[in-house]
Image (cartoon, rainbow, N blue to C red; front, side, top):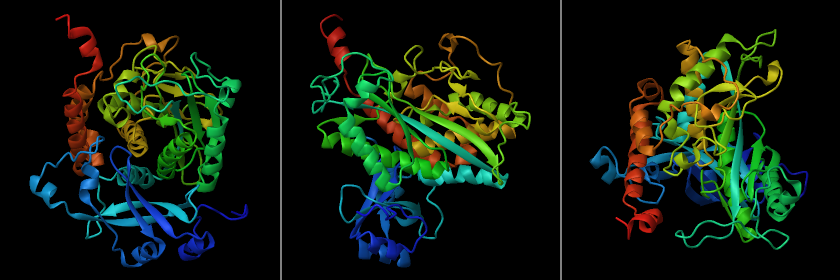
Length: 456
């Protein structure tokens, strides 16, 4: 493909763009509540026709699928069995070339009722609704995600522990190599392919580092619009899995895939600017603004109540434990990574808060929506932040739920957030997550067989 071709859509005529890039097939993505990409693959003629006649449909049960592939049902049994269609409306601003697949493009779609009301169980609509709250106040949210993941050896038997992959030197990593450049080179075939494919799809990748775990990497995405970046996070996950598989490995975004290793996070950096781009988290003197303090106060009050948006799976809570390279608190401080809420170093324009609690397994739309709605409520309610933490905040008492069961109970009872995000989303999300929890609790684990089988 010639270097001078723009491989991501930038407002050009859709038909011309598709023709220029010789596209004959389009994968149309609808992210579900778990961040799994569902949807349809369309011949380009059918795709173009759908833009005109709006006759592209998907069963509404797409938002009721549990992470193991089973349908979770619905609060309304009649609705669940009827399974009415949703209208899929492609967002042409997300159109991009699919790397490694000649003639294929990717696009994200939004879902609507037949009368054009947004289907509010959709995570894209949930995040968009939160961003609209900011827009009505004359604010614009800016975010930057940092995403950790592990490269692993293939793991065809889920009863066996995950192991590190063999690197370029013919050996698997067996000790930690945080920030080690030589250790990074062991997986250069994967990372090079990942950067090349990211460039084709228009992903705004920034820096890549080797993290604390064996074959654990972290990628930073450049700051920007939250909705666009949530799309990019899911695209990155897709590309990372493809790049790993092409090199005989797996890429996993589980929050805690290896018991003795660090967990994987999705840190979210957040700031607010006005319509002119003026930063609102610091005053002209460079000091924290009252808005910034209230925003942090909102995060401190509401994050413990809406943890399923940041820790959506039973495995997520294995990561959020003190001294396990993940904060288990909602303390805040300047440049202190033991705090759940960190204010990175930087001047007025860079004043931001980093939410360090979301796991890499979190749905990016919902983790971003949850962070922004908590901060928004803090501003609206003028909540005070706590005193700044100092020293080792891992020792701070945690107010976070310790299990998925507790987290779902607190989430269901959080009325201020429930009122803003809406009943359609809350009931759908709680239904799916409750079914997943019930399925997990019915499994007898290897720990139980190991320690209870012959002893109790």
